[in-house]
Amino acid sequence: QGHLVESGGGSVHPGGSLTLSCEGSGYTSGRNTMAWFRQVPGQEREGVAASRPGGTPRYADFVQGRFKVTQDTSKNSLTLVMNGLKPEDTAMYYCALSLIYYNRPPLDAKPYHDWGQGTLVTVSE
Figure 1 (cartoon, rainbow, N blue to C red):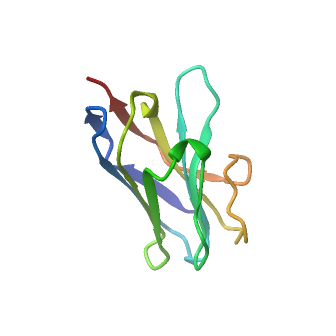
Figure 2 (tube, rainbow, N blue to C red):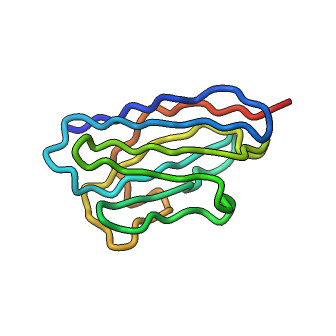
Figure 3 (tube, helix red, strand yellow):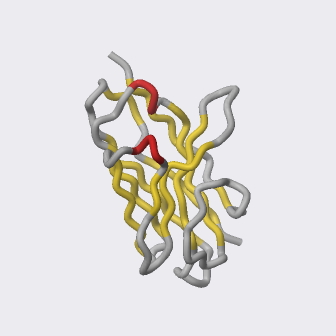
């Protein structure tokens, strides 16, 4: 059974940058769909960026060109570089994986069956 571990969260000022990393283990193939989600207490989990091998990543509208996601199929890893962070980006960020190879990687949570424990991102003055 696969396992995902996130790292890289922290506290930054508005306009700052963070890089989140997700490392997968226990998967027999790297041809998986992976994604980053975020969640604020009391709100639903929302998709941030999704990727599949050899495809064009998808981003939520609120990303507005500030984030970049990179997938390494040899390691089942997913990296999210976040620039221009805003206070509204404050959330717990989760890595997710689906063994299904989606042509259009989903930004909703239902297709993903493996989740990491999350890493906290705080953006404040």
